[in-house]
Amino acid sequence: MTQRPVVIAGGGIGGMATALTLHQIGVPCVMLESVREMKPLGVGINLQPNAVRELDDLGITEAELDEVGVPAKEWALVGLNGNDIYTEPRGKLAGYRWHQYAVHRGKLQMLLYRKVLERMGSASVQLGARVSGYRKLPDGGVMVHIAHADGTRGDIPAAMLIGADGIHSAVRGQMHPAQTPIHWGGSIMWRGVAWAKPIRSGASFVGLGTHKHRVVFYPISHPHPESGLALINWIAEVTHDKADEKQLSGWFRQVSVESFVHHFDGWTWDWLDVPALIRDAGVAFENPMIDRDPVPTWIDGPVALMGDAAHAMYPTGSNGASQAIIDARVLGAMLCEHGVTEAALEAYNSRLCGPISRLILRNRGAGPFGLLNLVDERCAGRFDNIDEVIPPGERNAFMADYKAAAGFAMEALNAAPRTLAPDARVPESPVLQRLTAV
Ligand SMILES: Cc1cc2nc3c(=O)[nH]c(=O)nc-3n(C[C@H](O)[C@H](O)[C@H](O)COP(=O)(O)OP(=O)(O)OC[C@H]3O[C@@H](n4cnc5c(N)ncnc54)[C@H](O)[C@@H]3O)c2cc1C
Image (cartoon, rainbow, N blue to C red):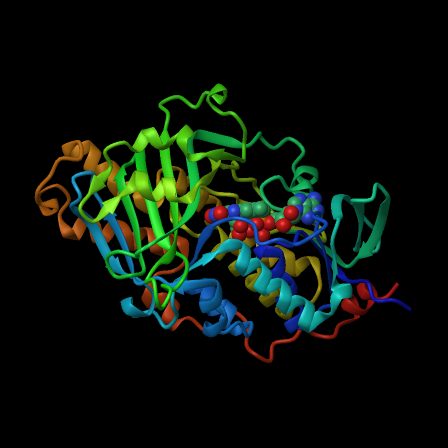
């Protein structure tokens, strides 16, 4: 008699959070990851307080997050004239019960990976194992098809398959064979990291420029005690009026900073030198800003999508990784309520698919950066007193609306019960026994 596990396709932040959650609630699982070796890839991402809360509930401490990032203190939009458009405190400084963290994506992924190995053992992860498809079984389970990096193929019978395999998800491709191609709206981002003195609060997220031409930067490490320098993540962005794919030389690739830094010539103030910050990085990653059109459902019987596989979105709201963590926790809660059943996946889907699909479309409208659109429209970026362009009430209402849609409105989050109680466990049920016993 062997256990039939839940199989997780993909070991990104979403897959790792799912594995840790399933382990916490007593559901056997195996994570299949296509890369042969886990490496700390990527640059900066933000973890909103709702996601930090869930990591806390998973036993990931602030001290551990401080090793892969830094609590964000401020979020600020600044015009090209160097004047503030909107600023607000973030995380605990704003009154949340949890920090917002700005972290190195790859280091966070490795932290979660270490936790998976420590808690679940090395047999719980298979590297070099790409999920190539699935077949639903008559008994309610699912056969997961795997293409191994050594060229061999295999199958694993599973109680469920969770597709956490990112924006190019094979699981989603099978679930929605007629899905539209990846959507690109005309923006190109170049991302990099450089050591520099953190400005403003010392841990500020700053978006500077216009809706179509801007730079975003924030520290993702504590300052070095002697030099005072911190690792600064920057994203330089230019939007073309027409999204002509001929403007793209690749979807994700490493480029020299000299190939694009000219877009930011003259972006220097006495408190910031954007071309110098970009040049200090040496290399950058060119990423078109892409997402996927929402799909009507994230489930197909015992198969569910989560994270970018379910809702790849523009990073304008800084909530892609946070939402992946929330997905994992809501999935866990639904499994505790309904057992390892299709009803649990249906409850997960009806809780999240609709609202998060709307958030994808909202982020296409620039998410919280939408305030920059208003400044462009009303004064072409020229203002002395922002209150005369967008009154404070309008600015505050805009941001409150966005945060409510993204699930991190402060009062609601602070008052919300835990997604999963510490002692929550999946119920023993005849259905679970049938699906996990072969
Ligand atoms: C290498 C990399 C670098 C990134 N860098 C940044 C960044 O700098 N800033 C930022 O904002 N966002 C970045 N992202 C995206 C960000 O991590 C995600 O938006 C967010 O964390 C949600 O994560 P996810 O787990 O759903 O998807 P992802 O992070 O994309 O993880 C998906 C995982 O699944 C694996 N995989 C893919 N297909 C299969 C398959 N068929 N079978 C098994 N495994 C599969 C991938 O190797 C990957 O490890 C990056 C993603 C990747 C993969």
